[in-house]
Length: 168
Image (tube, rainbow, N blue to C red; front, side, top):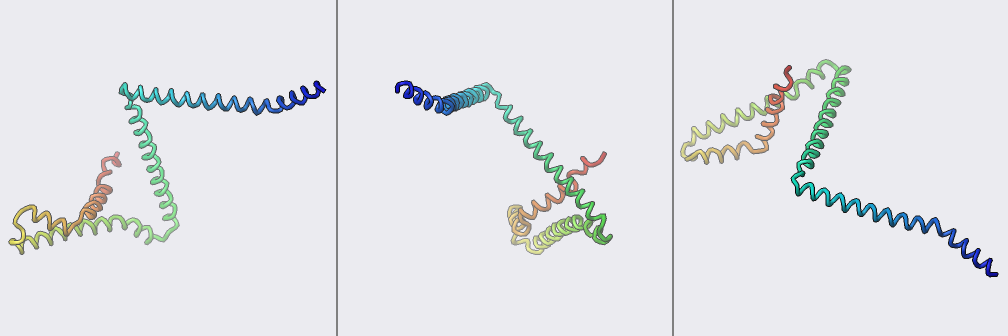
């Protein structure tokens, strides 16, 4: 009787042994991971305190460079796709596609010229309304908004900003 009790108890304990070992192992792993995280945090704080925070800036610059390279690759792929499509298109479609950006640019530049000419004429014909340069700037801001200036600046930057880089 005693032997069967010990063998039953021993069998029960042996069947629970793998789960018990897994429990102790997971506890040890969690303790080890927590210790590693604590050491890493202390190390990062110590390095930052010693002035090694520049490494974080280097990593940020690397990330920005990767993002710029990805954008350039996407732009290049879009240009290649457009060229492939235009190979099969009618000649007038290719001509139209090639003139869209310059026409939009001409329209915005002409808008700027006409607005400035109109502003100049208005100031010339109403000298009593404009008493100082500040009044002139206020009228100009009402007519030509910051959003339009930003679009015009983007267009000019697009067309003329990269010319020095593209010539070889």
